[in-house]
Image 1 (cartoon, rainbow, N blue to C red):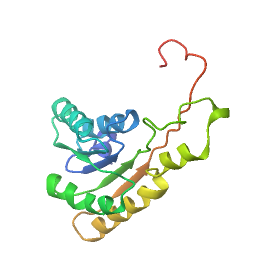
Image 2 (cartoon, rainbow, N blue to C red):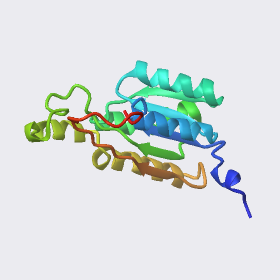
Image 3 (cartoon, helix red, strand yellow):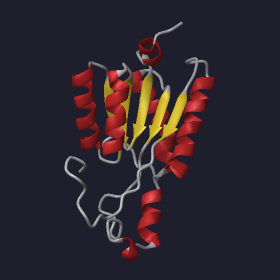
Amino acid sequence: MKTLKELMDLSGRVALITGGSGYVGSTAGQSLAELGAKVAVLDIEQEKCDAVATVLSETYKVDCVGLAVDLSATDEIARVPARVKERLGRLDIIIHSAAYTANVPGWAVPFEEQSVEPWDRAMAAAPGRAGGSLRSCVAASASSGAQRQASSAEAGLVCGARRAPLPAGRD
């Protein structure tokens, strides 16, 4: 029987994380890199992707790459698997944690002031739209015989304005 450490070992695997420079995505990147996976950090700003990829590489001694991708552009999404394979050799895991909320007017306002438009902009990169295309890429990659199996997961986080501060240590 395999040990838990053996079951959790991701050495030789490559993970792609959308929203990878955000809080949820970068935390997922830390977990995967700590378990031995190479990590492709995808987000809309190259500089932020590179910064997270550098920290992951230096901290966990695994190959990582930052890739700027606009997940609302289906042509960019279609090129992602090839870009990841070119830089890291394969693609095994997708963690989809992207949603566009930064600088969206009307997003971080009290609930009563919110409208449909900011929600639509945020959801343009949400799992239902981009995630399906990326999952299809992983399935195609896995069925090509390049590797035995592939996985995908979606992480969701919806934040709004908060009127009261969180308890100490929870911000």
